[in-house]
Image (cartoon, rainbow, N blue to C red; front, side):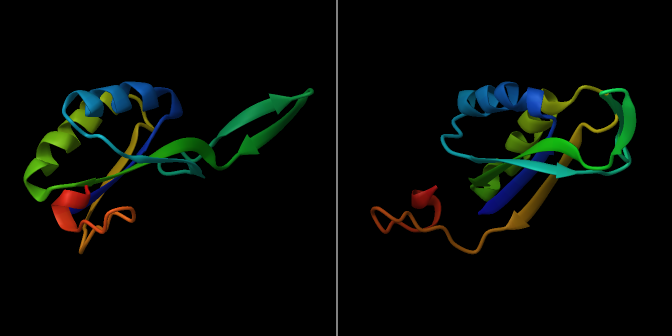
Length: 112
């Protein structure tokens, strides 16, 4: 099993979620996050005063998936989160040792 964490632009969330649902991904965790990479923030004007926004708002999607579906799911996230502009985000993949469904006690792939 694998855990996918994707940091994407907030306005791409619905598109990514819908595309994942279409390929059978039934659950995910979504968190509003802030950060920066190469984009390094930007300047904004508020009430006539210019200030630097160092941390940009993003959305983090977390999905637990069977290892054999990993590449398909990554492709769906990439295709639907991409704008072609700097700041599109990152996808992180890590090994998932175990998953336990709290309600039933199911473990592993059955709990996903």
